[in-house]
Length: 322
Figure 1 (cartoon, rainbow, N blue to C red):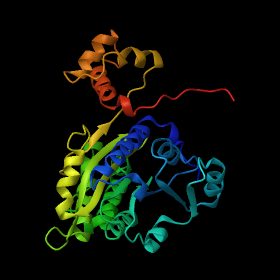
Figure 2 (cartoon, one colour):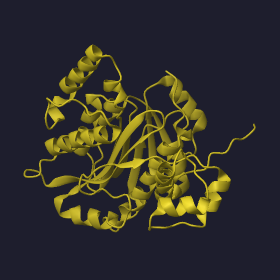
Figure 3 (spheres, rainbow, N blue to C red):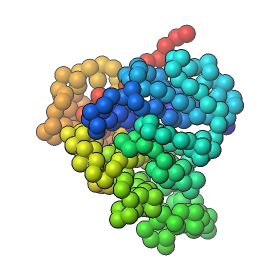
Figure 4 (cartoon, rainbow, N blue to C red):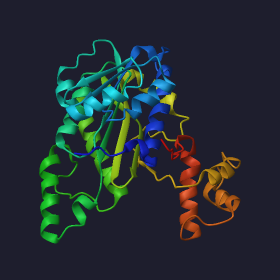
């Protein structure tokens, strides 16, 4: 199957840069540094996550896990640095053998689908990783998978979803929601149940503290959750480390939407002079721009409010002629 060009998707890129910001705060947990961490991920053929990570945090050790030989061979060509270890393996198998000892880690389970085995991978890591490790999981979260079919197929799809995920659903009789916002929160609730099964609030000395969650679409709706595994006594340290972050979600609240608008370089440079702004950012940027970028003023302001929030996490994509 052809690999999607995630390195060119603007909302995915914003999610990726948000992870870098979350990683930047990890040394605040125990007064250490990032040299004690190893980053594990599913890099895809272009290894974009690893390239960015090496640019920003060159001291972090890195491991890319890839199950397809064809993609693995392309990774060998695109490897951004010698410190990146490439592993030809299935993520579930790798996690089953993973023994961190006292080494802290950052895992990004960056899946493109939605399977119960992915939730099991997430749970396995929660019970394995060292304290103050970070675990991030990304899952497909597209209501069109269940609600754009004919009635018989639609009911069958919803029934299959409930059967597959009933063990981590608050109410197994409830079908997946019809709206992307609600489905993202629905999946987050499922992951919260999954974390409490592994780290019971009343019977475990450790906990999983969420630090951010987003949903976005670059053609397909996705949901992503990031959190820290730590001793219960260390929860306050996590909350202090992320309390001033605009995108922090420390209490399992509604995931934040990422919908970065497509703007020209000239428009972005013009708006840059008005940022940051906190008072009615969408309206402020619309007036500063002087025209509508969407069909009406409300949609333009919503789009520009997204740009105000994520402009530091939104890269420039430039066409080059080889």
